[in-house]
Image (cartoon, rainbow, N blue to C red):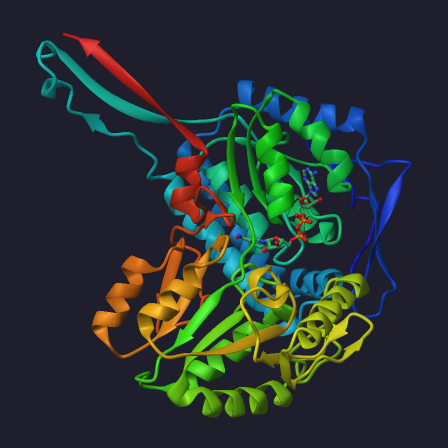
Amino acid sequence: MTIQTSNKQGNLVNGEWIKSEETFLVENKYTHEPFAHVAKANKQLIDKAVTSAYDTFQNVKLTATDRHHILIRSAELFKERKDEIAMIICREAGKTINDAKAEVDRGIQTFIASAEEAKQISGQGLPIHGQPGNDEKMAFSIRVPVGVICAITPFNFPFNLTAHKVAPAIAAGNTIVLKPAERTPVTAIKIAEIMLKAGLPSGYINVVNGFGKETGPMLLKDKRIAMFTFTGSPNVGREIKNNSGIRKVTLELGSNSPNIIHHDTLDLKRAVQLVISRGYSNSGQACISVQRIYVHRSIYHEVIEEATKLAESFTVGNPELETTNIGPMISIDEAERAENWVKEALEEGAHIATGGQREGALFYPTILTNVTENMKVMCEEVFAPVISIVPYDEIDEVFKRVNDSRFGLQAGLFTSNFHIAMKAAQKLEFGGVNINDVSTFRADILPYGGIKDSGIGKEGPRSAIEEMTNEKVITMHL
Ligand code: NAD
């Protein structure tokens, strides 16, 4: 499939695609050939983009019905262009074509759910009479858009995670300055292009491209931006929080997601199939990717054997082929980092059941055993197709070990014991707990977000709209 890489692939300001002298290269992550040259935004252009978003927010109002229709129309156009968008994701992110198509499908649902929410935004009636002396008053609240939202996105789900920011922002009546990940900006550019085609007025979405270290501080300094919605690494999240002042911030950050397989699991085969396939999908580069697997000692060896067989059955290679299960990591550097972490774990006493090999950016599905909780592959976010399997004896003991992490995004637990399931729901310190499913499961319509170093605030269309609006309280003396 030929993908058009025209000079439109740049910065969008007030409905106009601005060319720039300076461009940066986006490479095909499998072949390492040039995929696109993207115009880089400088200080003046960023200023213009924020001005466009700010002026549009002040002067161009869309009704809730308009916003609903634009988001639905966008979803229809994405559907028509699904194959093209999936191929862009496949080439610029290295994601397998099957996973890329699935991502587009999910993103379309995120747009549709946001469109539905656009019609449901409301405040609440407030019980002012509950306080003595207020019988002659009434009170209620309304929800109002915050204004200009700056959305900063990561490389790993360039379509759906951008959708999780731009669709609720528009649903709530805000305007956007979007700064996509520099390694995968073309997908985001396509989203903006299609939203304009769907009838979004110029200035509602503006796109600025460049490297986070340069563009980030320029955006953070601009006080006309009312809110930052960020998905990415914990270190950058911390920087954004520290530099955003008293403005609203949502941070969707990383994790080292744990998954527990208890001995009473009704369908052990399904459990192993899920932890393995979801640990390696997108080469392990998902914030809720299965990383730590805790297995009851009575089934430990059986699980390792089955997991190893499965891991070895995966085809690693060209992501454009439908037969490929695991494509390249985002860069050779990242694959080298994963390789070093595995080597380090082995030097510290871990055993390797399978994997560990690297060919350029391709990293083979790896299973480690005999690990300890202070090894990087366990306590840091590995963000690579590397899984560690650990035995446990008591369920309370494993809950403690699972919680003993600076991260808290999502956890998975497989058990047929209702009591244990409910105990996990209560005791596990995470933003989400999936029972009889993996940490990687996410229904896009639900609230989603982490605690501890995994982030602040929730996404999912309804929750994101709550974050992206202010509740204004109205009182009236009768
Ligand atoms: P990253 O933090 O390197 O980059 C994310 C974005 O931040 C990019 O657009 C980048 O240009 C920008 N950025 C970099 N430095 C910046 C700065 N100083 N100021 C402002 N912006 C800056 O992350 P990545 O490598 O693209 O993505 C991987 C990370 O994202 C992992 O840690 C992963 O767990 C996390 N993630 C979290 C979720 C979630 O929902 N919790 C989802 C996907 C990815």
